[in-house]
Image (cartoon, rainbow, N blue to C red):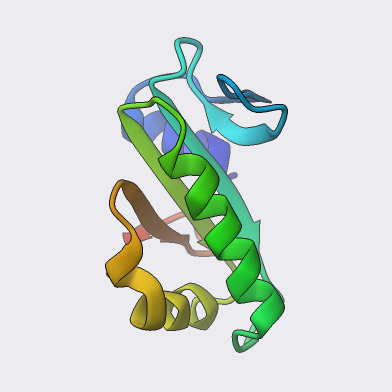
Length: 111
């Protein structure tokens, strides 16, 4: 669902594919690589653990080192996890947008 929502939001077809210079497959990448995003879903009503914080930090690090115009992380189910992460580490993020996608498919920017 996130791929469809962000394809519409960016006005471009986003597909699962590798990004430039990395072997990792990202969930939402435009054909020209100028838009790149990934999705992360944690269990509902979950609170951040060190493992989840590390997962988010790793995703942010990779996205910030990819030459793209738009970079984002889209979270689902547990809104509290990315909100808590941003509260503690958000000042370190330079070029990655954080979004929460509701069950109804509504996109809310976090921060």
